[in-house]
Image 1 (cartoon, rainbow, N blue to C red):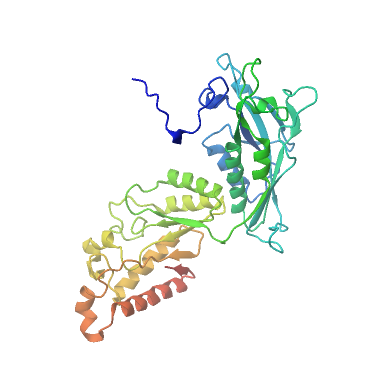
Image 2 (tube, one colour):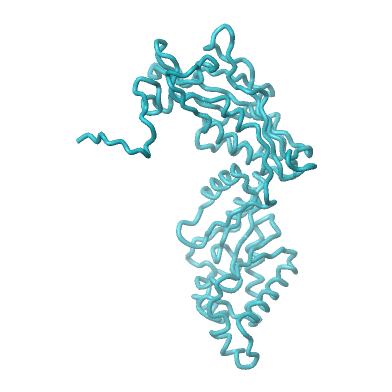
Length: 404
């Protein structure tokens, strides 16, 4: 039985006689290729750009070339698309992206330079100007997008590239067969019969110009996320690298890996036993990869609660207050915590560490109460603060900046 009911949420009815999204394969719609000159790249972002190009999900969208000359906008089908089976190969338009490090980058609404500001501008209003001789001729003039960012903020260069990739995918507009196409290059449309006027979805130079000439200022110096690597589907190194590339294109410059007991401590084989944690080498590899994109990886551990996986083993029973919480004020607790902090921070460049300290349920009401409860009569809040001060002292002795 054929369903003839059309839901309003599916959008307007499309003219079956025109070139629309549901009558033309996506592979035949015109597309954008981002071209980046390797010699022109600033040294601070060149390795990261190389990785983004090599591992981009659509390898035909990003191109890194060795020429110092900009590539013409073109607008013709690529050579790869020319085949016996491709009766309507897609036109390809080239956008050149140049990255410029400068301290003279500022938001028009603010006075002075701002290292959290990046700007994007184009060499012309249209990447597809019409030739007087024929609208179907290839465009020999290069279309150049210039990205300006502060040398201290390389992550903003990747943020700009992510924005450009988004614009390249989102500058399709809908043109009806009744509309005037005299101002539009024919190759902005999908290839169609010469007997029909160009119509349907097309690449819009106006939309591209509007979205590619912008200036943005980040509201925060640090933009990051924390990933739980202590339970469920933990990221392996390959997945962590994929995540880092994605975060780079979003403009992130910080990643925290939340590891309760999924990291190695030398001489402590029962710490993280049978948990499949990260090795020192794996964490170092993740940190090295993140550095390519200007992303700081910060270890995030637990130093009081959330340690049930560790405290279940006989080796650590003496460090228990409750099944999930360490025993405060016990000297051996702080010996172990120093080992944990040293091991967690060793693989990383960062001098920052997140100490956790959340959800310390039952603090002071387990073995702590048996040892100290009657003699000092401290409330849980005081036990918590005094323990935090001792852990922070360990961090300071190791020249680490702690956070909770």
